[in-house]
Image (cartoon, rainbow, N blue to C red):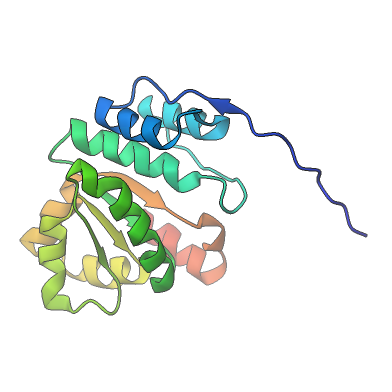
Length: 183
């Protein structure tokens, strides 16, 4: 049996006014009619210091929620850092372009560390970047084994937001390892 869920008209809302003015202005320039209601609600919850899980279809604008909040956080708290975990190197490369497009005009540098980034280069990426995209494997194997490194320790103490993208893939042994790692 097949069941097709009929499409629905999108519901738009105004961009949350509590966002940093630079972030709000950037969003208003790109989305003059507003953003999807789930995006506005997600941003509002994050601005209210709530943890959220966005479970909407592919290409529904989940990334805009955490990128907008990240920019807001980083502009308001200059010492803050953001760690975004992506389960695959290819996904990092795809998302890196989106992050840079969104954050570069705000003068917020983005870096990434995956298995292809040489170990001697990683500390500098942590130092220079406000947002670091990383695979869970590298975070687990490299960060945990380098906690005594000053750059790693400084980065971790400054992480104010952790993003787990594609959370639905954290299942089975991979999910168990992630749960232990995050604890």
